[in-house]
Length: 256
Ligand SMILES: C[S@@+](CC[C@H](N)C(=O)[O-])C[C@H]1O[C@@H](n2cnc3c(N)ncnc32)[C@H](O)[C@@H]1O
Image (cartoon, rainbow, N blue to C red; front, top):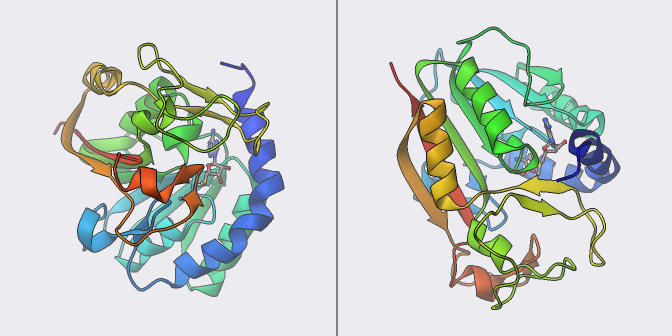
């Protein structure tokens, strides 16, 4: 793993922020949430409580912050953190445009600096969920949650990483990497579409880490691309993602 992954990832997201404005605007406008690279519906996944009135919620690695917007619409008092000033610029503009009162923090989701037990609900969709080492950001999320609080996060399924070639070309039917010892991948120097440093674990390593921190798994979802999906998204072809789990969602509870 490269040591300065936080600044590497921040710089990549700053440079790429302009390319996320249109999708951010569309998702802020969306009547109902849709999730992940394949736009699976909230009706099918149920990642957010339907009524968040009076809840304190935080989004970890918010990007353009449409998830924060959806939580604010459901009644939550929302805080959103991101390490990229460029992404936050879009997020702040869209929050104002949509009349959402969100507290934005520019910073690293591994060390947020807010008091213990500040939140009832935490979420990350492809934010800290994949760009921060699990052992660091999950401990911080646990610290920030109140007893009885819930963390939901969505990211790449480890099987998709195992089937991803080292040069960054799309996921295929070959086991390109060992599953044992999985930590994530450094995409900074690949030939096809260089990106940042992202993190993942084997399923058993995720489970062991949750138990060590004190989280209980209340639900685990493996996500596929919907029927009719086409093209390649996040370096995964639709035909692959319709047959193998492309994304995963963990719902974790902090004990009362
Ligand atoms: C793909 S976006 C996630 C937002 C949105 N849900 C989405 O899928 O577009 C990833 C975000 O994670 C942020 N990020 C990466 N590393 C981070 C860190 N250490 N702390 C906070 N945010 C981070 C990036 O700046 C980027 O805005």
